[in-house]
Length: 131
Image (cartoon, rainbow, N blue to C red):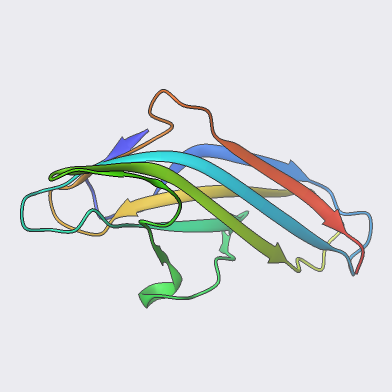
């Protein structure tokens, strides 16, 4: 999956769970490799979102509630970077219906291209935590 757009797109990394009690929480664990090819004069940064169905549950640490990446580990060269997003979110859905969690991403700077799962394996793990 790749994009050069500022709009958020799905990474195709998603999983579903049905909580046994509405008071329980869902622990979302994500690790996903990425590769950014940057436009000269810009940063290698991009944004990610974690969603429950259509609701963003990413804790807001930057503008718009999204995360500026560069988080995780990886190598940086003059025009590209590669690494892995490692994200943990504890969600309180207050539901016993089936819930789908997914990762989205979008670029932070014009003409950068971001690749997810670029020949590598990604994981999303959901765990129900007694509330």
